[in-house]
Length: 253
Image (cartoon, rainbow, N blue to C red):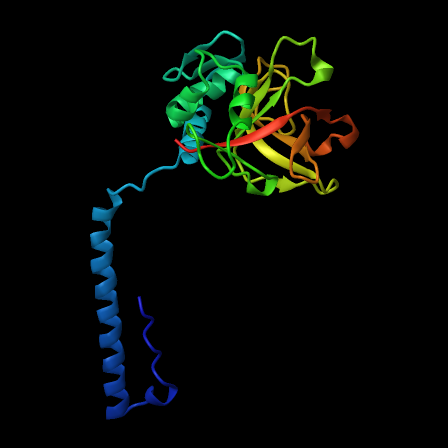
């Protein structure tokens, strides 16, 4: 809408010229208001035309629906999911596969097997291109390119070889930011399923774990390759980060 030109200072006094200018100003203003009113009344017809939602946005939408419907959650290698009742009992890979089945079904199907493990997510992403999507995936090349809705996955670190899991997987839910102390470290707000809480975690201390959000730190080398993670976020000393192979992927469809 065009802003009406204010009435000139010398036209604010009495007299025919001031009156005429004032009338023209009012007429212009009323015309602009009428135009705005017509446009406003027409808006609802466009409100029904929905923009196509990206797979990333769909991932965030599914995660949001989990968060808002959540009544109880538990970390478990055996899935028990009832979204209507707000029950989500699962581990990280069950959660990630369930979200992708709803938000990016082609990306989910490309992982194969009935229940992909964390290492399957890792292998599926690491095989992708950073330029051309394949099977519903793109690999993200650098930390500054990571966006909300992207997937992270790592394989089991050598130092944890006695553990039964194959690694970890989850979703980035906000734009990463640089660590204030370590220049090669990026902090990320993530959603996952775990027993061990992260920094600023939404899960209860001493609870059953399961679905929630927290902050993790990722260390990158000079080639922008993720080489280690700090499970406890910004406060964790860099010397205690866990080295392993880490990838970030973007679902496309």
